[in-house]
Structures are given as C-alpha cells and as structure tokens.
Length: 418
Image 1 (cartoon, rainbow, N blue to C red):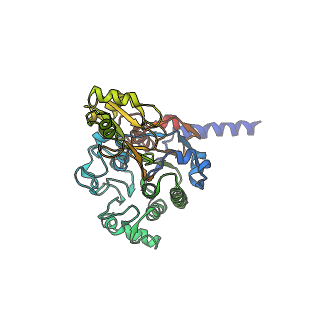
Image 2: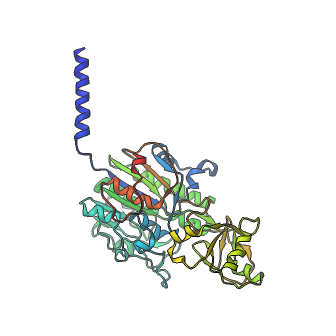
Image 3: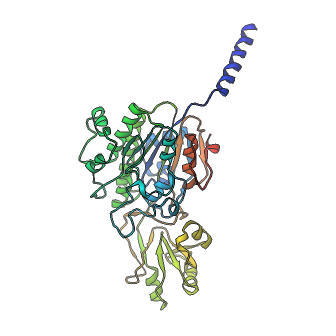
C-alpha cells in the first residue's frame, strides 16, 4: 500500500512539474505541394493513388475538408497569404507575373507589404529555412534556396540562378551530404534533398518548402490524369525520404495553393451577348463573368443553372466585393459550369471544345475547387476539420511557433487542432 501511495505521489509530482515547466519550442515544417487539389486526398482510393506518406499523415493527424483560397487562386499570391494571413491586396503579391511584365515574378522580398511567418520567427530568434518558396530572394532567413529563374519551361528550371541567390555556403553543404543534389535543373527531388539536409544537420525551427512538379504536369497534360498521378506518387516518395530525418517535436503541415480543373470547354460570354444582339461588354476575371449593367446581368441570370448553358450560377455580389475589391464596378457576377473556362473575346462560338489541359485561377468558392491542408505532430489530435480559409493558415502556423503575425485577418485554428 505504501508503495502504491509513493508511486501515486511521484506521478502527481511529475505531472505538476511537467505542467509548470516551460513548453518546449515546437518546430514546424510546411510542405506546399503546388496544385494539390483536395480531391487527390479525399478520392485517393477511387483514383487509385499510391501515396502512403500522405495517407499516413492524414491518418495520424487532422485533415481539413478543403481550403477556400484567396483572389486570385494562383501560386504566388496564395503562397504569400499562407505565410502572412492577409489577402493579396494587403501583402502586395497580386498575381503570378508582375503586371505588364510576362515571366517576371515577384521574386524579391522588397515587394512584400505585410510581415511574413519567416520574418516574425527570425525576429524572435528562431532558426528559419525556405526552399523554393515564392518571394524569398533576399529573405532574412538562415537557410534559403529561393524560387527564381531566368528561363523556364513547365518542367525545366535552371539550377544555377537559384544556387547563385541561395545562402552562401549552403549549396556546398547540401552537395557534400548528398552528392546528387547539384544538377542542371531544379526539381522536386532537389528541393526535398535540401529539406532532408536541413532537417538532419541544421534542424530549423521553421522550414517552408514548395514543390511544383504536380502543378506543371497538370498544366501540361491535365489534372487527375495518369501522368499527374505518377508525379504526385513520386512527390509522396520524396516527402517520405525527407521525413526520415524529421527532428522530434516537429509539426508537419501539408498545404497547397489552389485547386485544379481541366479545360474541357471554353465559354465566351461576349460571343453569347453578340449572338443575342446585345452589346458585348461582359468582363472576365478570376474565373467569373462580370456584368456592369442591368441588361447584361439579366441576360446571364436567365441562363444560370440551365443545362448546357455554360453558366452554373450567380455568385453573390457581396461575396465578390469582399473577396475581390478590385471588381467594385460589377453589378453582378456569374460562374461558368464545371470544366468550362471563360474567355473574354467576342469572336468564335459561344461554347467550344477545350484542350483538356489543367488550369486554375477560378473563383475561390467554386464547387469542388479547394486547396489542401493536412497537419500532424506533437499536440495535434487525430480527426477531420471543416472547410477552412487560407487566411487561417498563417496565424495557425504562427501559434505553433509561439509568434504573432501582425494584421492577420482570421484567428488561428490551433485550438481546434490541439
């Protein structure tokens, strides 16, 4: 009996000491799989996907039903929202390419107008790393391979321009640990080898990595195709290889920047108006058809939801003005049907066959068009989460690291995950 009481007392004492001791600093690894529509995860069985690593992370952690993106639902603005907690008009990265400069991305951190996760973590004295993350040339991080190129095709990004802008000495360190790291082209394998090195030898408190081959393959050959599945399965293998070196106490988050849809049909709202002997003055933007006058609005409103019309629904104008303040002149907004991509021109058929390649940039609340969020690690319960906003991710990551993101528009999800 005495032994029992002594053991119980020691257990109480241990619990008290554990509760009163400062919490150990959690580490955070965020892996962005560009173009990972949440259907790849939800429908993995139906699609026949061999993604054991992602399945394990989902089983051991929490998976959101989907992530509603920001405007526009493209790579560079979305990635910046993920680590700032604010929409594009506030963080300053408005598009992929700078306006009027095709191929010129927002490479440099000088373009940023809002604090980022790596900045607030660095200011707190945490060790930080970024690997092929957008808008990181010149970032104040300890270890950096920025996303940058001079020339590129969908699958070919030169290695040298990235290496030239990386943290001095980092290329040599990774290459010494992994002689196959340095190559002519940067790809997902290079990125995840860099992450494996960082996790094993540098052990950052925050690591952000962006891998993009799935997005490239979907643009070239279509989303949810055998070719896209093969790329995702390879990414799953690369993630598993990196996670072999995951330090204890690390929370792992899998995120993506947007959903995907294939261009099965092209819908031309101005050709529709022209055929109806109405002024061809509809606007196209962010996957929507905009009407600036009552007559145009009434025409598309009559088509919305009708079979074969090419128009799926009217999007509430209050939602449009909230998520896209730049569209303030629109009186009404309409969304094309699934598989239909809007084009602005008045010439050509109102609806014609598409090229069946993949695309994105649609309206964030479009049906079955969501980004992904999976999180696993110490303190994260197992389960599922409702559909969340991309604006909630940044403050969640900040809370995991015990830092604050000034100006974040929404609250952290940590209380629902922990």
